[in-house]
Amino acid sequence: MLVLGLETSCDETGVALYDSERGLLGHRLHSQVDQHAVYGGVVPELASRDHIRKLSPLVGELMQSSRVRAREVHGVAYTAGPGLVGALLVGAAFGRSLAYAWDVPAVGVHHMEGHLLAPMLESSPPEFPFVALLVSGGHSELVRVDGVGLYRLLGQSVDDAVGEAFDKTAKLLGLPYPGGPALEQLALAGDPSRFDFPRPMTTKPGLDMSFSGLKTAAITAYKRVDDEPQTRADIARAFQDAAIDTLVIKCQRTLRETGIKRLIVAGGVGANRSLRAALAAFGERECVAVHFPRIEFCTDNGAMIAFAGCQRLCAGEHERLAFGVRARWSLADLAPPG
Ligand code: KG4
Ligand code: ZN
Image 1 (cartoon, protein in one colour):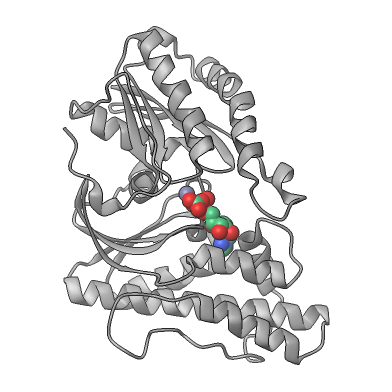
Image 2: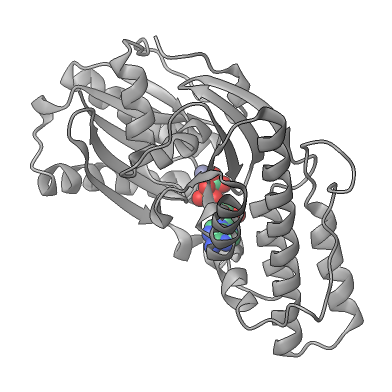
């Protein structure tokens, strides 16, 4: 089954073609980062308008470069939430309309299910069950995954998502939006021994996490010392080390408690090379197989939506002509496809 996937939940317009037999045939991404950077964050109305401008040409380009004709597409998958409601509605209306015009089924995909299944686009996909560490701008979750749609939320951040903490700390350090990659870059020059930030919620049992305290630790340290570039790099390093250590400890705990030996890491923060290295080293130490999506499929993209949609469409699931989107949507509300 050949599926066109559309991602428009936030500030990236992603489109992709995934075939259940042949794999990923192609994908395209248009990032709106430059438009939002001047405002220091995503402006929802601008995001919706840009998705409207870009979706149709991107799909045309993708189909042409992948040499796929409209009549060869068997289904359309679009992100139905969680995300910015206006941005979601653009993808949903476009996707549903294309499916109607092409007379094929359409399915609304949960954005985090897309992230969670993204490692399955790689050459040696993980088998079920596995533990998923989902780390993005809006979510920090540890999920037990027994199959597509079989998700049990085991732990989550009680306050800021880890990506949000990266972004806020980056802003404090005067870094441009989006903060996560910029902070990672700055941390490379940081001295790891200068500041020692806490590893929140790691001394007591439990799988929940907290990242707002790390942001506060960064603010406190910043106010106390000079504003030299080296100091900023040292704070970035201390923040990143503490966030990564905390995530590794929580993953270790979750794997021990569940007895599962497979971990996948997905979502935008999964693009962080230090986090990937720390989790890969942990995997070697503990004989845990650790799977990541390729870096470009950690952040938002159309390929993960095409893949997740394909799993559901192949099982016969599809939407009626009326469709909806959800700004808030828990993974735990999902059921297996069909
Ligand atoms: O998954 P994603 O693209 O969008 C959401 O679903 O939220 O994740 C975006 C988040 C942002 O907070 C961004 O700063 C963070 O992922 N991020 C990173 C890196 N790349 C993206 N955080 C740390 N290091 C990175 N290299
Ligand atoms: Zn995302």
